[in-house]
Length: 112
Image (cartoon, rainbow, N blue to C red; front, side):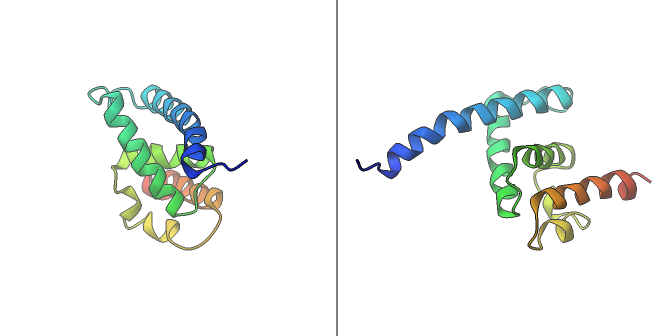
């Protein structure tokens, strides 16, 4: 039996929709005020764009993508281009390690 690319895409769509829902729920609970005026469609667009960016940096595990999304909401859609984030995200390496370093930098360098 031959499975075409369109059929594989059909399998991916329900998974993607559930991921988007989990991320919307998480972000809305964590950033209630900041996201109050944003529609679900707008937030889903932010999630999709940021997820593509994260994947480009080798950040693929859901927990790590969720952290990446939190920084996008907190610092803006181009947080990855900020002077402190760019050098962490660009080099080849493990996505979890990158996000751990982003967390450490945000906690111990930016907030001191």
